[in-house]
Length: 259
Image (cartoon, rainbow, N blue to C red; front, side, top):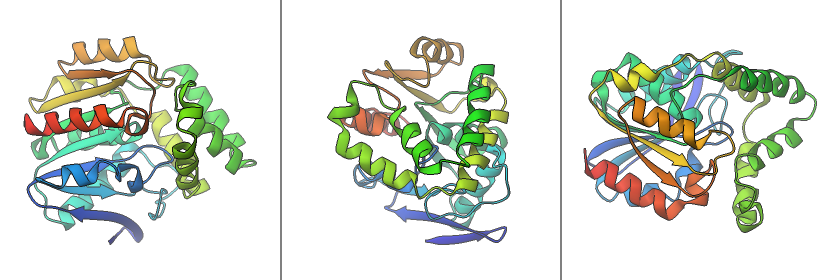
């Protein structure tokens, strides 16, 4: 389905009945990343998936997609489908957006799951990497996107999940060049949102990859303890919905059930 927000088409899906669960994908992904998860969750819940600005079938809205702007579009979809309270599950970039949404609308949150994500801001090295990537991608979009996808998996899994990675790369290439740059700019500029976790009483879960090449496991564990968030640690990388799909299904099912 399509919602027009500020003259931009926002694609979303709406399935099932019950407690509303909103699944928010990561950078260079789209709603299809949840295809293995949705059938399980819709057995007892209403599940919304959204293509973020500049990703999948959704348009861009300017040249910087801040976390707050992304969150506005999520809010617009939820208002459109008349959802007042929900459980948010955000993968990577989707987690940053979930935090921005929760900061503005804490009363609308029943639970928040950061999946391979963090409430910490980018450090200086990560900011420099994003600046460099945004320059390079303008000349070599396809190769940069494919490399970025490969870098999200633990190295030992590149052969094991060869077919799945090929599909992820194909979906990633649906992201527009403008969408790539605008999201990277937004992520680079985002602020520390530890307080969103510490200051609110809704249920919180952080899903951590022990060998995540993007987010250091020990730093994530410290964050979970500092923000009084529940956490689970999976044995692999940044792409838990592929590398640790069985463990993820169990963790999400238990988290939803606990709310």
